[in-house]
Image (cartoon, rainbow, N blue to C red; front, top):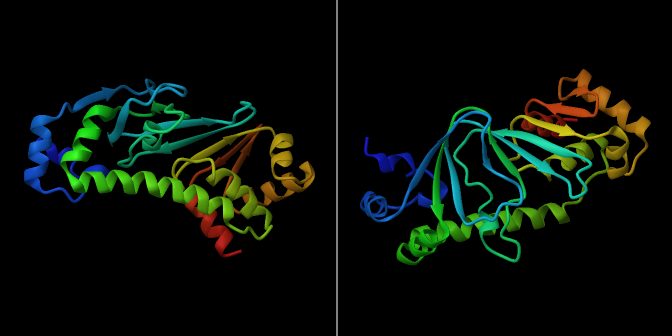
Length: 225
């Protein structure tokens, strides 16, 4: 199999013809890196000077609140681009830390090549615009979404809003007092509801930790409650 097939299914390259992919592979600096488990791929606060594509393996993503009172850990293992929206704008910095949970294969494209490919290939340019536009639209839609006040939905929304991907394994590291304050409820009410969610197999509770094996199951639970 030609090596360019390894990135032909990535979001930025979808829709390009085989001839176009061959041209890109032959005229673009494609940096492939193998990252060992435990190594950091991208650090929070680093300048975003290009795009990192996860081709193979599983990444652990750590996302911290501004005051660092709580953070979320999640695992992602599908073809994604690491925060492509951070390549442009007023603050072109990564806001999350990406660590190899298992050995990972990463493709890196620098910003200059991305701009050149965007100029040379209309499909590539449309894909780039769609990716960034989709990110912005999802954030705005969430801000205006009217919630029911149903407590499990409030807990789910708090976690999902802060995740990079709305499915899979997540851990929320937070003191119950802080989470109760964030959700504008008493600690006793929160604790009671979390225990119900644990009894129903949706979450697992440990000290200052809420583990969600599959966030999509949490969503289904809310829809059928």
